[in-house]
Image (tube, rainbow, N blue to C red; front, side, top):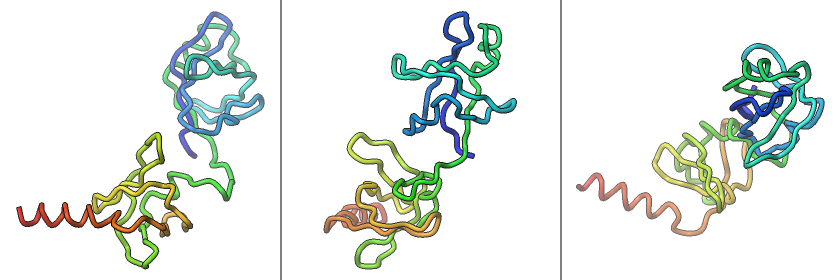
Length: 163
């Protein structure tokens, strides 16, 4: 299961809640969607964007007291099967290999960046995700990067050693 968001607080008196969606897939909150929560499952009755988040009504949550009980509940769902998407959980731990076949380290985390998400490698390198040309989940990521992208990291490493 993947964490897709979190209920932050109740909204109004009829059971709606504010949801901070951490997934970029807004269809996670479509009516009829079933999400896993700490204490079971929740089915989305309705949802709409609201002030940078979402107002969501879940089936069976009809008044503020029920909504209050959902405060800070983490919402999870199964991964969406979309072969054209890159999923963070598939990138973590994979080795990044450039177009020359040189391995540059394993992905430790993916950093959110407005221009392009960045793969942070255990070597300290940062690689924009837009340079990914193929990947095998959890094993390897092939990239086609501009000449010199990794040279700056190597020069910095050498300075640290010489120090």
